Length: 453
Ligand SMILES: OC[C@@H]1[C@@H](O)[C@H](O)[C@@H](O)c2nc(CNc3ccccc3)cn21
Image (cartoon, rainbow, N blue to C red; front, side):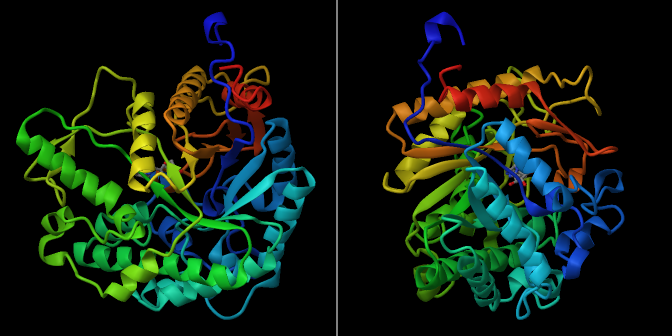
């Protein structure tokens, strides 16, 4: 904060400050106490899939250290905690029998959070499909919509009155683009034909869960989308056309059907013969009204026309004039403001939004020095993106909260432990947690409602 900005970035009363994680990235003990395997257990144990051969077998050992981690959340002044449930811990086969020890873990976690005055925000699905369901076709099997709604019902009923804000699915685009189109993520398929079918079933499953929630649940339910705004590399018509294809394939593929608009026209051009039509009843199910929408936001892209680039025939042009994080993502806070304004417009200005993930990976040392982890780049990223978020609110966007990604350094999927996003450092040799300078700043932001920015 400088004297001229003192109090300029105060956030609205009731704005919800938290941090986010995901089950497979932090819990470890993924097969303990009767849990079933997930596709990430299989994928991470398949040689060649994971950087340095890393797996989620231990991760942040959160399955055992959850009490310590709730105390960490208190020290960070968190008002909320966004976490995901491991479907196969709760239902080892993904359908049918419930694993009592599995659901008990989340029961204790939720009660522990509530005892500390921390609001639990629960994501039903953050990429870790039960392997037993993948054996039945997984997201390619249309029955998965009912399997997912049945799983959701177990949690809606178990946590009724305690969990009041639910997210159905984290990032349909990454599930499909990573898992079925390019194969970089579990289950590692590479097919545009499969991607269209899996994407449609992910959306159907979301709709079925929302419908079931209206029957048995209590509170508010929404979906979490990753949106990466696309800015054309030049004013050439072919670059604008490329921008539109990239925007359709990432940002509109799932948003448009959720908003009752069906798939974007450009998807036919992107997927060609792999593009599929689906019955209207599916789109009616998909567009079930929801209560909120989560935005996971990290960066923007500047696509140019690239006829050889599959499947969008577009390629991002690196903007060397801007800083880039360890994951190669450009740092561009004003693009967050633009995205929130765009999403507000795209959702008709009536759907409350929440930034459900925002953060950055930078090099941090493997262990603390003098009990501190100095992470100036992450401090700068956090400050500037919170200011950009504040700017969006000032433009009339209804944003209800911000969940920093991530509470802890954790397993960054196929990149393993090589990329650290945490506001808390984890020494993976000792499991020691050390709040980084970015976490200390965030605690002050929360305490002052943004006044410290
Ligand atoms: O990569 C950081 C996080 C990841 O750890 C979370 O589990 C996931 O929800 C998440 N989503 C994004 C943004 N979307 C994305 C875009 C391209 C590749 C991978 C993710 C970033 N992150």
